[in-house]
Amino acid sequence: MMTTTNRIKKLAPLIILLLSLALLIPGITQPLITLQASLSHQALVETGKTLVEQQDMHPAMKSMARQFLGSLRVSGDSLVYDKTRSILGTAEDLWQFGYRFVAVLILVFSVVIPAIKSVLLMAACLSQSSATLLKVNTLLSKWSMSDVFAMGVIIALLAANAASSESAAINFNAQLHNGFYWFVAYCLLSSAGSQILVRNYSEIN
Image (cartoon, rainbow, N blue to C red; front, top):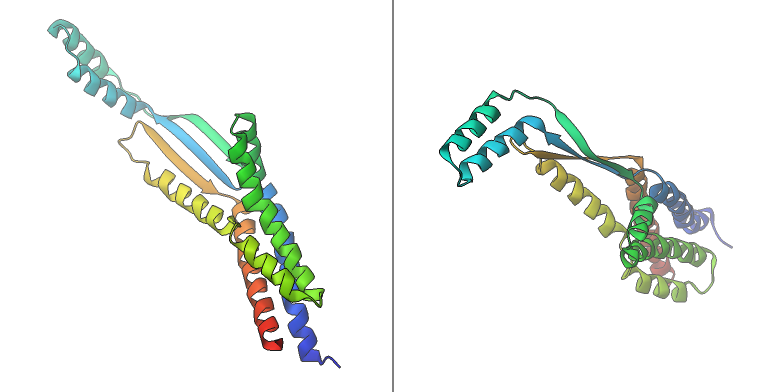
Protein backbone atom coordinates (compact mmCIF):
# COMPACT_ATOMS: atom_id res chain seq x y z
CA MET A 1 0.00 0.00 0.00
CA MET A 2 1.32 3.42 -0.97
CA THR A 3 2.36 5.50 2.03
CA THR A 4 1.69 9.21 2.41
CA THR A 5 5.35 9.99 1.68
CA ASN A 6 5.24 7.98 -1.54
CA ARG A 7 2.06 9.75 -2.62
CA ILE A 8 3.67 13.12 -2.04
CA LYS A 9 6.78 12.07 -3.97
CA LYS A 10 4.60 10.87 -6.85
CA LEU A 11 2.36 13.95 -6.91
CA ALA A 12 5.09 16.58 -6.42
CA PRO A 13 6.50 16.45 -9.97
CA LEU A 14 2.98 16.28 -11.43
CA ILE A 15 1.90 19.44 -9.59
CA ILE A 16 5.11 21.25 -10.57
CA LEU A 17 4.70 20.26 -14.22
CA LEU A 18 1.04 21.37 -14.23
CA LEU A 19 2.12 24.75 -12.87
CA SER A 20 4.88 25.03 -15.47
CA LEU A 21 2.46 24.29 -18.30
CA ALA A 22 0.09 26.94 -16.93
CA LEU A 23 2.97 29.43 -16.89
CA LEU A 24 3.85 28.65 -20.50
CA ILE A 25 0.55 30.13 -21.74
CA PRO A 26 1.13 33.71 -20.51
CA GLY A 27 4.81 33.19 -21.28
CA ILE A 28 4.11 32.98 -25.01
CA THR A 29 1.10 35.30 -25.22
CA GLN A 30 2.00 38.21 -22.92
CA PRO A 31 4.36 41.02 -24.02
CA LEU A 32 7.93 39.77 -23.83
CA ILE A 33 10.19 42.68 -24.77
CA THR A 34 10.01 46.25 -26.07
CA LEU A 35 12.65 47.48 -28.48
CA GLN A 36 12.99 51.21 -29.10
CA ALA A 37 15.29 53.32 -31.25
CA SER A 38 15.49 57.10 -30.93
CA LEU A 39 17.30 59.63 -33.11
CA SER A 40 19.35 62.22 -31.23
CA HIS A 41 18.96 65.63 -32.87
CA GLN A 42 22.23 67.06 -31.57
CA ALA A 43 24.21 63.93 -32.45
CA LEU A 44 22.76 64.15 -35.96
CA VAL A 45 24.07 67.72 -36.29
CA GLU A 46 27.51 66.61 -35.07
CA THR A 47 27.50 63.82 -37.63
CA GLY A 48 26.66 66.40 -40.30
CA LYS A 49 29.64 68.50 -39.26
CA THR A 50 31.93 65.49 -39.54
CA LEU A 51 30.60 64.66 -42.98
CA VAL A 52 31.13 68.24 -44.18
CA GLU A 53 34.77 68.13 -43.09
CA GLN A 54 35.28 64.90 -45.01
CA GLN A 55 33.83 66.22 -48.27
CA ASP A 56 35.98 67.57 -51.06
CA MET A 57 34.09 70.78 -51.83
CA HIS A 58 34.74 74.46 -52.54
CA PRO A 59 36.10 76.26 -49.44
CA ALA A 60 33.30 78.83 -49.57
CA MET A 61 30.64 76.12 -49.64
CA LYS A 62 32.34 74.27 -46.81
CA SER A 63 32.52 77.47 -44.77
CA MET A 64 28.80 78.15 -45.30
CA ALA A 65 27.96 74.59 -44.27
CA ARG A 66 30.09 74.93 -41.15
CA GLN A 67 28.40 78.19 -40.18
CA PHE A 68 24.93 76.77 -40.79
CA LEU A 69 25.53 73.61 -38.79
CA GLY A 70 27.37 75.53 -36.08
CA SER A 71 24.40 77.87 -35.62
CA LEU A 72 21.97 75.02 -35.10
CA ARG A 73 20.97 74.49 -31.48
CA VAL A 74 18.76 71.47 -31.19
CA SER A 75 17.86 69.14 -28.35
CA GLY A 76 15.77 66.11 -27.68
CA ASP A 77 15.22 62.84 -29.48
CA SER A 78 12.77 61.51 -32.05
CA LEU A 79 11.41 58.00 -31.56
CA VAL A 80 11.89 56.20 -34.85
CA TYR A 81 11.16 52.62 -33.78
CA ASP A 82 8.97 51.24 -31.01
CA LYS A 83 7.82 47.62 -30.94
CA THR A 84 6.45 45.49 -28.11
CA ARG A 85 6.02 41.83 -28.94
CA SER A 86 5.27 38.47 -27.33
CA ILE A 87 6.76 35.19 -28.55
CA LEU A 88 3.66 34.49 -30.62
CA GLY A 89 3.62 38.10 -31.83
CA THR A 90 7.24 37.82 -32.94
CA ALA A 91 6.50 34.63 -34.87
CA GLU A 92 3.47 36.30 -36.46
CA ASP A 93 5.54 39.32 -37.56
CA LEU A 94 8.21 37.07 -39.06
CA TRP A 95 5.53 35.12 -40.93
CA GLN A 96 3.99 38.29 -42.35
CA PHE A 97 7.40 39.67 -43.39
CA GLY A 98 8.12 36.50 -45.34
CA TYR A 99 10.48 34.82 -42.85
CA ARG A 100 8.13 31.88 -42.50
CA PHE A 101 10.81 29.27 -41.89
CA VAL A 102 12.20 31.26 -38.94
CA ALA A 103 8.68 31.80 -37.59
CA VAL A 104 8.00 28.06 -37.70
CA LEU A 105 11.31 27.32 -35.99
CA ILE A 106 10.46 29.68 -33.12
CA LEU A 107 7.04 28.11 -32.66
CA VAL A 108 8.29 24.52 -32.88
CA PHE A 109 11.40 24.74 -30.70
CA SER A 110 10.22 27.35 -28.17
CA VAL A 111 6.51 26.52 -27.89
CA VAL A 112 5.39 23.19 -29.38
CA ILE A 113 8.22 20.93 -28.20
CA PRO A 114 8.32 22.38 -24.64
CA ALA A 115 4.53 21.90 -24.38
CA ILE A 116 4.77 18.30 -25.63
CA LYS A 117 7.58 17.65 -23.16
CA SER A 118 5.45 18.87 -20.26
CA VAL A 119 2.52 16.70 -21.34
CA LEU A 120 4.77 13.63 -21.68
CA LEU A 121 6.26 14.19 -18.24
CA MET A 122 2.82 14.56 -16.68
CA ALA A 123 1.76 11.36 -18.40
CA ALA A 124 4.88 9.66 -17.01
CA CYS A 125 3.81 10.68 -13.51
CA LEU A 126 0.56 8.74 -13.93
CA SER A 127 1.68 5.92 -16.20
CA GLN A 128 3.04 2.50 -15.32
CA SER A 129 5.35 2.63 -18.36
CA SER A 130 7.27 5.72 -17.32
CA ALA A 131 10.52 4.47 -18.85
CA THR A 132 9.28 4.81 -22.44
CA LEU A 133 7.85 8.27 -21.84
CA LEU A 134 11.02 9.44 -20.14
CA LYS A 135 13.12 8.19 -23.08
CA VAL A 136 10.92 10.12 -25.51
CA ASN A 137 11.21 13.19 -23.29
CA THR A 138 15.01 12.86 -23.25
CA LEU A 139 15.00 12.74 -27.05
CA LEU A 140 12.78 15.83 -27.29
CA SER A 141 14.92 17.69 -24.76
CA LYS A 142 17.76 17.75 -27.29
CA TRP A 143 15.50 19.75 -29.62
CA SER A 144 13.90 22.07 -27.08
CA MET A 145 15.24 25.62 -27.29
CA SER A 146 13.13 27.33 -24.62
CA ASP A 147 16.04 27.99 -22.27
CA VAL A 148 18.24 29.08 -25.19
CA PHE A 149 15.47 31.44 -26.35
CA ALA A 150 15.27 32.99 -22.86
CA MET A 151 19.04 33.55 -22.82
CA GLY A 152 18.83 35.03 -26.33
CA VAL A 153 16.29 37.59 -25.11
CA ILE A 154 18.59 38.59 -22.24
CA ILE A 155 21.54 38.96 -24.63
CA ALA A 156 19.41 41.08 -26.98
CA LEU A 157 18.41 43.27 -24.03
CA LEU A 158 22.00 43.81 -22.91
CA ALA A 159 23.25 44.38 -26.46
CA ALA A 160 20.55 46.96 -27.20
CA ASN A 161 21.20 48.91 -24.01
CA ALA A 162 24.97 48.69 -24.45
CA ALA A 163 24.68 50.17 -27.96
CA SER A 164 23.33 53.44 -26.57
CA SER A 165 25.56 56.39 -25.75
CA GLU A 166 25.27 60.15 -25.52
CA SER A 167 27.32 60.63 -28.68
CA ALA A 168 25.41 58.10 -30.81
CA ALA A 169 23.02 59.43 -33.44
CA ILE A 170 20.67 56.50 -32.83
CA ASN A 171 20.13 55.22 -29.31
CA PHE A 172 18.63 51.82 -28.62
CA ASN A 173 16.65 50.79 -25.59
CA ALA A 174 15.15 47.45 -24.59
CA GLN A 175 12.77 46.62 -21.76
CA LEU A 176 11.56 43.25 -20.53
CA HIS A 177 7.91 42.65 -19.73
CA ASN A 178 5.82 40.11 -17.83
CA GLY A 179 5.85 37.58 -20.66
CA PHE A 180 9.60 37.08 -20.26
CA TYR A 181 9.32 36.36 -16.53
CA TRP A 182 6.41 33.97 -17.08
CA PHE A 183 8.48 32.15 -19.70
CA VAL A 184 11.57 31.93 -17.47
CA ALA A 185 9.40 30.65 -14.61
CA TYR A 186 8.07 27.96 -16.96
CA CYS A 187 11.63 26.91 -17.90
CA LEU A 188 12.70 26.67 -14.25
CA LEU A 189 9.62 24.77 -13.04
CA SER A 190 9.62 22.42 -16.02
CA SER A 191 13.27 21.57 -15.43
CA ALA A 192 12.70 21.08 -11.69
CA GLY A 193 9.66 18.82 -12.28
CA SER A 194 11.60 16.76 -14.81
CA GLN A 195 14.55 16.26 -12.48
CA ILE A 196 12.34 15.24 -9.55
CA LEU A 197 10.45 12.77 -11.75
CA VAL A 198 13.67 11.20 -13.06
CA ARG A 199 15.10 10.95 -9.54
CA ASN A 200 11.92 9.28 -8.24
CA TYR A 201 11.98 6.83 -11.14
CA SER A 202 15.64 6.01 -10.44
CA GLU A 203 14.91 5.35 -6.76
CA ILE A 204 12.06 2.98 -7.63
CA ASN A 205 14.14 1.06 -10.13
